[in-house]
Image (cartoon, helix red, strand yellow):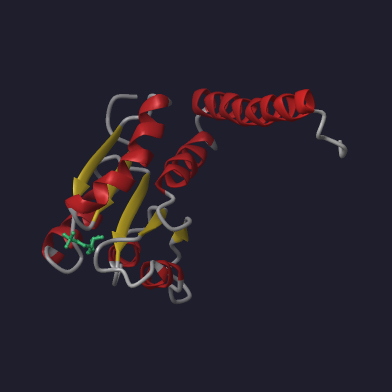
Length: 170
Ligand code: RP5
């Protein structure tokens, strides 16, 4: 794989400090992605062009992050039949983050956006990889190894607790 299969987009460069976590996970798994700024409100034409050309350019999943009145993920989902994962971001114009969560989550019937937690860009990267992993055995294998690493981290933390003699439940 060398052509980008995941498109990571965000409403502003200020979202990058969060959205980079999606990029870093995909990089770790060696999944080719592209990353750019597309704003639903400031560059609406660019948003339409991006979504309309996404499938034909070879993208298979789009990860879209935005804060405040976060219309980007939903609008992208309205313009393409590719799966769209939305990342609500607690941005400078967010009241407390709920505005972006609800703007991305509460989509009308027929136009889903798979919404991750507030600032949950890493999970968006993981979910994008999992979607690709349904068809790609090499990616699925790396995701299985990732799951094992999660389990091992918990086991290691239990060992620390055991050393203290604090654990009672199995
Ligand atoms: C949203 O407004 C962007 O996604 C960003 O989270 C927020 C603030 O943007 P800037 O004013 O920092 O460019 O559209």
